Length: 222
Image (cartoon, rainbow, N blue to C red; front, side, top):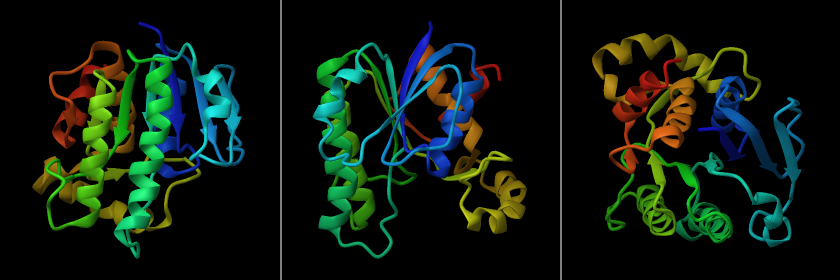
């Protein structure tokens, strides 16, 4: 199938990595990136919409028609945040965006970048895990083709401009962790390829752990 994907968060490391894989995959024929500020990316199959307020996207909703996938890579760290603030920037923002898409394209594949150890019960002791779990659960109610990606450490794709600086200091440990704890690490390229693959062929589970990310990446043949 030909994929027409909406991607958020491309000015961050994860979103840029997913965009990189989409641009190089021949099955992805059209990409719409939605940003608060210009990304600086240019490509024949790429279209960009600049919109400052992600809590109010009704004014650009018409531009979402005709897309069959969304790779939602927009997110913030919970470090230093209280639960109400983190909930607003994680649950409220994501679900507001997703409801607009579900109304426009209810059959679309919605891939959400969550996190390893997300709490699906919504009742655990770790704040960020509860909020992410609540977000996942609501997304799965909105989209029958929803997939919640739970990566651990992601080894960055060489040459990308938005790689976070501290990854440069962690990269040396990747081969070691990969050997002793393979279910905790993957590459950023694996994540992008896995999202494309579930869009092509769906998957048996809607919670995509690290082992599933790597299996889907292999299935992609890239």
